[in-house]
Length: 273
Image 1 (cartoon, helix red, strand yellow):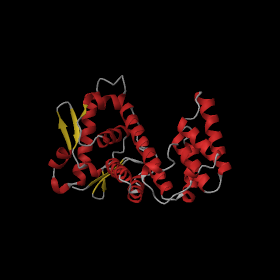
Image 2 (cartoon, rainbow, N blue to C red):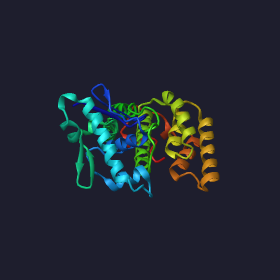
Image 3 (cartoon, rainbow, N blue to C red):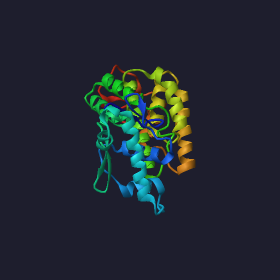
Image 4 (cartoon, one colour):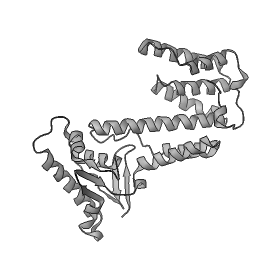
């Protein structure tokens, strides 16, 4: 059985060429949570809280069993050659809950996490080109806002936040590697968009400042710092971090440490900022 489940965007799930995504909202929600925690037992209590919140109906347990049965029917319909055993092997009943039993690599979220992990290892070893490539491959798996076509309860909201943090972390690492590789001209447009979308994200603003400075736009880099500082003070009552303030001072001083150099080890980029 070849399964492919996508969580990094609209929920999509196929076995071969056949979609097994339910049309009703709550069964989609059930499938999404099981896929996000593929290989793990998700308890009945957790699933009930996700689907109905703190005040589930009295029929919640029976309705949950019905949703599981509907998912199994869809799996069976996509794998007629394996008859009824296929669905129960794929969506297993466990003590106290259910488990989606497919390989991790069948779910895009877990493929992305694996690529990010290997990308981090490459960067830590000083191989920026490989790290940048692996992180780019991971980020290419995102296809818009996560689970955009699925209602989210408390558990899926946690999963969605975790996915977004993974994406932002990968973006930050890829951009940092790109700066070390001298790609600052190509990164300017992306950083302009990212800092507008993430007005409190200091690391992205710092990368934007470095890219602008290396592109001969020190004045614009200082404007980015002023905008970040104003936002942090007005909205949070905080000054920028010491790291970003040191970067600001280095730009004012035209520090040679900020000049682009050919692909040094990861620790050498904008050292100390």
